Length: 124
Image: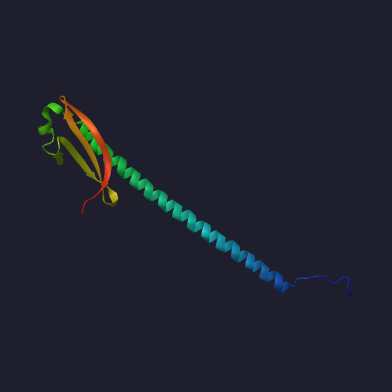
C-alpha cells in the first residue's frame, strides 16, 4: 500500500470495542427507562388505592348521613359512633395511611345541615 491509499482504518478490534460500548450504553438506558416506568406505575397504583379508599369512606359516611332523620336523630345515632361538640355532630371513618375522614353536620330548624367533609391525620 502506498501512502496515498492509507487512511484512517479502524481495525476489527477497535470496531468491536466500539460496538460493545454502544450496546452497553443502550442496555443501561433501557434499564433506567424500565426502572423509571416501574416507579411511575407503583406511584400510580398507590394513588389509585388512596383515591379509592377515600371515595369508599366518603360513600359510607354520606350513606350514614342521608339515612339520618332530624326528628328522631338520637335514636338514629344510637348504634353509630359519633362526637357531639359545640352543637355539631361529627361522624368519622378510618382511612389508609393513618388518616380519618370526618363528616360534620348540625341540626338547624329541624333539618340536618352538612357543614364539612374533610380528611385529617389521626391523633396519637
